[in-house]
Amino acid sequence: MKPTRRKTLVDSEPRSLPLTSSMPGWNDRPSSMWRTHSQLGGGRRRHFWLFCGLVVLIIFLITHPASDYLPNNSATTASPKIKWAEPPTLEKLKQWERDLPQHDLELPFPEGKTGRYVKFSNQVKRLGWNNALNEILMNTHLAYESKRAYVFQPYVWKEEHYSWPQAVYRNHESLPHTPLNAIISGPSAGGSWDVGDDAPRSISEEWFDVVCPRKERRIINTREVKPVIGWADGIDVFNHWKKILHDAPERCIEIEPEHYKKDFYPQTFDLWLWGSNRVRSLWPVFSQSPTSRLLGPSPIVLSAVERNAYLFNPRGPRPEHPVSRSPYDRMLAIHARRGDFKEACLHLAKWNSTFYSWNLLEELPDAFTPPPGGKEGENTPENIEKYLEHCLPQFDDIVAKVRDSRFDYLRQSKAGHRTLDVLFLLTNAKGEWLEQLKATLREDGWHTIVTSKDLELDQEQTEVNMAVDMEIARRAAVFVGNGVRRCRFFSENLLNANFLDSGPLSPVTSFTRDW
Image (cartoon, rainbow, N blue to C red):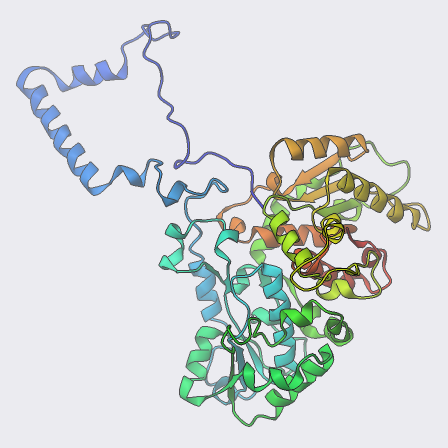
């Protein structure tokens, strides 16, 4: 998401005034420059003061380089996407994580120095947020069922997805890291379990080094486990890991990845699982687990949503029948990514990819079955076109999908008291293409249209802008998302949230749509 750009000290244009006599009032009174001259006096005394001023100016320039104040071609202005020259420090949030109450060696079992812990050092890094979130949630659920505390870690970005260039990363990191509590809240990030649940709370990886010194850890490499379970069903994969972690006598366990040359996806729950029907068997238990039920957005994300809530107030004519006052109950959110997505979509077509994760559930509309004729590594031109229809829909397809989704949603209203008149476009598109799309959709009766670029975000909110988009879309009555495997990653956690919010037979889940 690219927030609306506002000028700041770093990127504003000089505001100098032209020194021309035609400027109204310019000669009406002595200028401040001339007043200063007269106050300094003349002759030697004036020269003395000018000399002192010159010395002060030289000292100031030496100790305060102009690069601290003026734009240049360095990394601080290398990224035109944002108005902030540097990412936020997030130091207060990091300290808050350090001060979590479960970070105390003297706590009684199942926490403290006698507690049982598991760290998944094989968690995915440098991949899209929703790929990471899938794994974070399932690993938390596995730790919970194994009677161990989950060890949460910062989100590690893929560099090109981060809003700032490498030269200004926090603390000169080689890769940008964002504290997990900047993005989500709930048990996965160290939040409380249900009242009366004595499960150990999640701890940070920093505290894990304290409570579980390396010499006290049992290291389990994924090569010791994954070949045994192979291509088993998702629930069987889960139960196999659960037995190992539950039955192990060691207090501290760390899961380490196999070398990437031997297993390119060494995660406990890997891409081969998330991108296949085998994942379906995990849904019934996971969807009702406290890990999933207690998941929420972070306070930073919530503050961004509230800050921009006014943008979604309906602007069209008053509906003819009683409808909800909430703009989210009247919203259709659609994920329409452009630009770099075409290359990703072609790659997915090449490998005959499926939908991703919970989007493979049979209860959902808009299913996708890879067309016959392709094989791993290559596909037919006809099949590639089929993939692009789902992964990179064209202008007319987007308009038609919005129109059809609204029609289907309103048609199923028993009392006829639904309306959809607010549209949220989650997109990285810009320029003429986006403006034409908005104009066409307005002609279709959408009086309130907001895009990701319209959101006004502060420095911390910009850090987690993808989660802000997600939270707004999660609240929408209808959500339309992109279709195949990793292209669909954005939408599947919205689906998870909508199922949990409204139950498996609700209108919301019926209208979590795909292309």
